[in-house]
Amino acid sequence: MSFPEEKPENPSPPTVKKRSSSWSDLWFKNIKTPLKHVVWTMQLQSLSSPATKSPYIPKTLTPTFPHSDPTLLLPDQLLLKILSKLPDAQRHSNSLVCKRWLNLQGRLVRSLKLLDWHFLESGRLAFRFPNLTNVDLVSGCLVSPRNSGILLSHRGVSVHIGSGFSKTWKVCEDSLLPAEFISRGLKLLASSCPNLRKLAVIGASELGLMDVAEECLTLQELELHQCNDDVLRGIAACTNLQVLRLVANVDGFYSSVVSDIGLTILAQGCKRLVKLELHGCQGSFDGIKAIGQCCLMLEELTICDHRMESGWSAGLWYCENLKTLRFHSCREIDPSPGPHEYLGCCPALERLQFQKCQLRDKKSMRVMLMLCGAVREMVFQDCWGFNNDMFSLASGCRRVEFLSLEGCSLLTTEGLASVILYWKELQSLRVVSCKNIKDSEITPSLSTMFSALKELKWRPDTKSLLPSSLVGTGMGKKGSKFFKRM
Image (cartoon, rainbow, N blue to C red; front, side, top):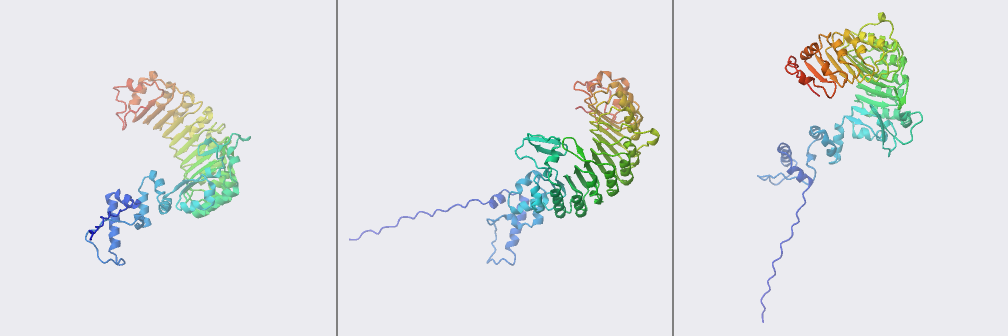
């Protein structure tokens, strides 16, 4: 008895596991056409190279890549050019792609603000960012409480403080690293970043700055906090220094002394200075005179919260090429400037600015405006004691072309008119937040003068109606710019 032969059941088709998309496939799929063409050309070259032994080359090639990163085919220099074209907002995400991109992205960084001093001492800063040209070490030199929610700031200095305040009210001095630590860090930075052009540091020593001067020959801009006369001996070797900011004393943060000795050392060593800022510095006529005689290229001088002796302003006459003179947060200008016959005029001075200063001494103000008789731009911003009598002293500056008044609450419309009507070369006027200057007090002569200005920004208070009251006068149409409102 025979049985029918059993037929085997149809085997189920083998399950084909779908390969998960790799990062390279997704990257190549979404890539734009020009870069896709570049990568595709490189792949063809690798297939047709003599080193590749292929039995045949198909007629139709599909752009397939291995599972590895396709950017490995690009040399470092080409990939650096590509990464440099990307916006700054993508640089952080680009550095997270792989270790190679992290290293390449570090080579593109030029400016850095250090927050952890150990990052510098460990050598990781030089390894990660070998091409730095701008380094700010101020925050890294200060040891702050980690869990403190109190931040104390003053211009370029910010420090976290605890609930227990210092008895001396010098929070930066209590939080500052030892001087030997800062000197060692400056030496390491100078040796690893010889192309440094800008540096900011606090509590530096003479030896630390000498290492920077010897290694970084292209250093052009330097900012020193808590500096004294001895520290300035170290920067005398910075022969190519052009911009210098000295911060000797900041109330509540730190205190140090920069006197005529330091200013003379500075003047004799840094003869190529173009911009100089003296913050909280002491000195007298001799120090300012030395700067004017030695720093012949000096064009901008900023005096901030100075502690200088009487008669120092007479030294400004020796700054023959000075173009900009700025006073910021000064309690007084010069209480005793000396006889007028010993005072000259700065012939090249073009801009005079007073910001947050106390202008109560009429004698010192008269002398300062005499020194700056040839200015073309004049700015008064948030100055205490600046009234009609003080502003009337500026009537002798007949070459003024631009005037800016902001926060001058004691100045009236009559005081403004008594000066600017004599300025025949005035072209631009800016009046903001001067509550005693009223629209209703505008005289016909002032209205005629306003219509001839090239630029007028008039907002003495929030209720100003001057634009609507001068409709039809042609104001702003005789110059190059139209009338502006806040």
